[in-house]
Image (cartoon, rainbow, N blue to C red; front, side, top):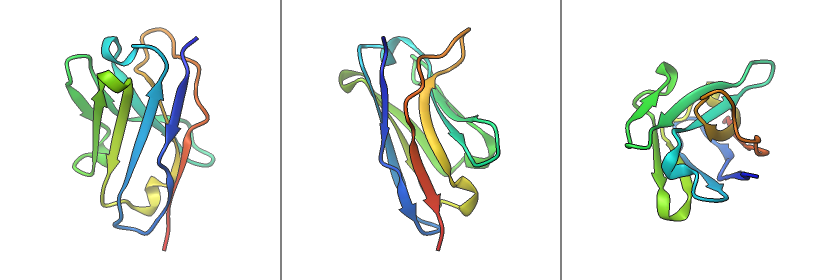
Length: 116
C-alpha cells in the first residue's frame, strides 16, 4: 500500500518561507498527477497546488505567485515551496494524487502555522 509522509511544516512569521516535502513509497510520483492539499480548522480540505506527470503545474488562486510545486522522481518526493506566507495559510498540509476516482491513503500531514 502506498505511504505518503509529509514533513517540513512549522511556525513561521508572516512573510516567511517554508519548504514542505512529501516522500512516497514506490514509484508513484512519476506516473500520477500529484497535489498538495491543506485543511484549516473548521474548513474542508482543499487542493492548493498540483503537478502532472508532464510537469505542468496548477495553483489555487489564493497561493498563485507565492507557492511552487515540484517533484523529484528519483527520490519519489514532491515539494511545496511556500513564500510570502500569510496567516490565512495556516493549516495542516497533505500530499496525495489528484483525484482520479480515488486517493491514496492520506498521510498524517504537516502543520503550518503563520503567526507573529
